[in-house]
Structures are given as C-alpha cells and as structure tokens.
Image (cartoon, rainbow, N blue to C red; front, side, top):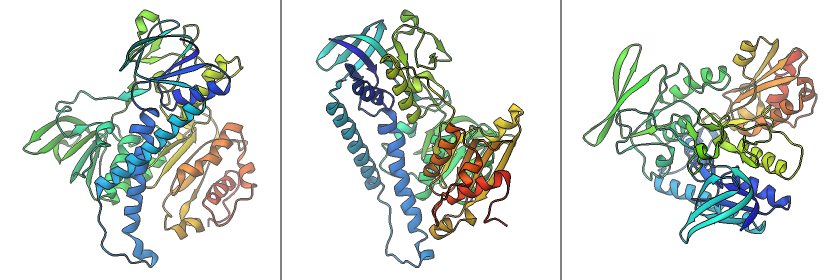
Length: 460
C-alpha cells in the first residue's frame, strides 16, 4: 500500500508524530516491533515513576509519627509493587492503542527495515509486507549501553530493562553509573531498605546538570545509608557462590563490594537496527543520524527523531521533534528549538532543570546573576515536611532568565514556570511581580526571582 508518511518506531517520538500526521490529514502507517510507547512507556519513564510512587509512600510511612499518626504492621510486598507498575504501564499502552485507532492510523506490529528510499519492509507473524511511503520518519530510539566489564554478562547483572522485571528485592545492589537512570533506581531500592552502592567514574554524580545540585544531593543520599563512590572505576564483576563481587579501584587502591544484583547504568546509544545506513547513504555522526532543524536527514523525504539522532535523549524532546518533522512534511515552516528543554530526575528529593547551568555560563564568559531561595523558608514545604532543597535562577545582567535548577518537593512540576520563562525570554522581574498563591511551593520561584535584582522577601 502507499502512504504519505511511514514511521519506523512507536515510542513517544513515533506515535506522537503519527497522531500529528493524522491531524494534518496525511495518510500514515506506524511500524512497531514490540508495544506502543517504546522504551519510555514500557521500560523507562512510566514504570520507574510507578516504582518511585511506591517508594515515596513507603518512605512516608516510616515517618508518619512526625505528623501525629500511628499505624500498625508495615511490610513491603515487592511483587505487588511490580504488579501495580505493570498495571499502570498496560493501562497507558492500551490508551495509546485506542488513540491510534481513533485517529485511523494503521499500526503494524512487526520489525521494519529501511533499505531503499520510499520503501519499508515489515516482517510480521503473517509474513513480509512491502510498504510504499512518500516520507519516512525514523524513530527507532535507543538501547542501553553494556560496557565491556569482565563479568558483565553474569546472571544477576543487567540493565534497567532487566531490573524492571525483577519481582524480589536484593539485600545489596551495586549501581554502575551515577547518571539519571542509575540514581533513580538507587533511590527506589534504598527506600525499600536495600543496601545500595553507586559507582561513578567521574568526579561527580549527574555531570550534565548545574554542579551545585549534585554537590547538595550527594551528602543527602549518603545520609540515607547509600554508598557513593565517585572517581571510581569498575575493574571486574565475578561470581562467588550465590553472590556477586564487584571489584572497583580509586586513588586509594582496589576494593571489593559484595552484591546480590548489579545494575549497569552507563548510558544509552542510538538504535540503528533495521536501517541500512551504508546502502542508503544516510549521514551519521558518532553513531547517531544527522538531521537539520526540521529533523530532515541528508536524504530527500527521510526524517529522523528522538534518541536515534543522539543529543538530548528525553521522551518529551522526541515528541516535539516528531511534531516538527511531520509538520514540515505537511508544508509548514517550522524549526526545532532546544532553547528550553526541561529535565526531571526522580530521586529523593526530586531534581529539575532548564536552560544554562552555572558552569556553562562561567565557561562562556557571559555576565550573569544568581539567586537562590531555600524550601526551608517556604510555608507549604514546611507543612509538607519536605523542606530540603532550593530554587536557583540564573539571569543575564538585564534580568533575562537564562536557566534554572530546582532540588526539592515536586521539582518536576515546579520547573514548568521556569521553562516558559526561558523559552519566552522573560525577565526575573516578570516572575517576581506575578502574584503567586499562598501557601504554595511556587512561591519559592517568585522569591528566587526577587533575588536577581534585589533580595528575596522571606529570607533574612
């Protein structure tokens, strides 16, 4: 059959691209080998957030007496926790399937191959089907990187894909990699009483965000009993009886960490499976597909979106890129902007950021101003019992907001106001003079904004 748009991959980039294509009146076919929603919905953002909620509730139960409440016996049934996670995922996958059906989008469950312009070959349970497509959108996502550590293929050693399927809690977990995925799992397991060690080769956790945040976060994690080993390399993993032993080395020498399970969390790489890059003549750079601001590749009528183009590997970025690509196919004058991309990290406390970090501004030589406001001076945060953390705003000399970071309660929600500020070039004064409801957490943003050209009101 012939289609105006053929999309390879049904993750948050691919299926959103398909929905927008349908809205524009284009005929569209979406090919997905597994389940709609991709990594984000099935093995990433959504299942981990379901686990985070259970971990948060368990942590809250441990301190209810602070709030004058007393409960009986408490226990964790981790199999039930995982069952709830699966229920949430299944419900959302079903929702995406219904959206596809309502939009009259043809979805083919099968493995697509793109080897020649204008043609996608799909292998399904019924056989092979050849699809003629006027425009191809490559949205094949990414896969976890498995670093070449001796012993990395032992039973009990796995990536986030495998650990999400575990229905029991280990006594000891070693997380290799102190990035977003590693720290989110470390926080979840630590909340449930697992002894967690995080091994990071670099000098800091979360190296891509404002350096002040990991400096504040690291001692908080250590206070929970989590072991943080920065500037530490993993030499090997070996089996000893029923246990694993992770051998690491830092400036002090070699040591061994016993573990029941090891999480490999050392990043992700673009997934080019099924795309014949060489035969097509598709340009790539460092294993990712090269695109312009309209998400076009070097080939006519071939677009690429999401993790497969490298860069910022976030679900909401993929969705935005998918919309840009198909709107350009539909004849609209559009361009992808990366000026204000929010990121959220669901550790405890939560972390969120947008725009420039302070180290980036320092390196650029730009003149900038900094203002901070702590949650400990916010009435709603104190009432919630969540007073650890701060809002940090960076602005130029005229007060235009360049970036912001938040560590504290509901940071992932609070960042939205500052994303709009960065995207629209608002000044700190615009935020400061906007009336914020009291008592609420967003008042911390208003207070930090006051501090760019003056002083926060509720800070001595």
